Image (cartoon, rainbow, N blue to C red; front, side, top):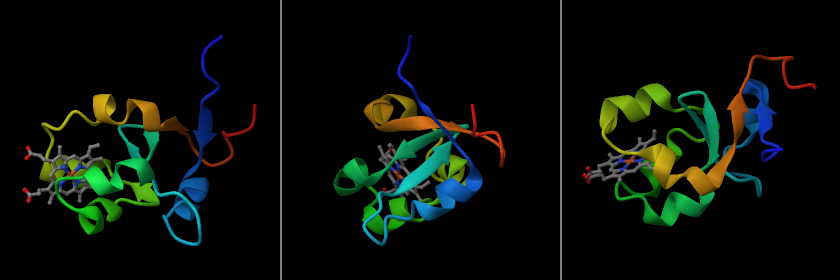
Length: 90
Ligand code: HEM
């Protein structure tokens, strides 16, 4: 059995803004990552990285630095898969 990754819906993602004591999550290429541990290390600074917090950052990321290997860099911060609303059960 593999790691029990979460199924994350857009409404769950929307709550993970990095505010109110919650971590900052984003979705990149259909996978959901916790950005909080990486925030202090982002070469573009924390405010830039926080632009994708609580939402799907795929497009924004691709517009800025599509060459960056986020899958490798955030492998230990993988939360789960982005799914449609209602698909999280089971
Ligand atoms: C650099 C923005 C997400 C890794 C930068 C820079 C900006 C930026 C503006 C340029 C900084 C400079 O040259 O002064 C953003 C935004 C993000 C985002 C808006 C939200 C989608 C990420 C993520 C990662 C990442 C998720 C990796 C986990 C990097 C790296 C650089 C960089 C490695 C240096 C790239 C290079 O110089 O080739 N970012 N970033 N960024 N960011 Fe991001």
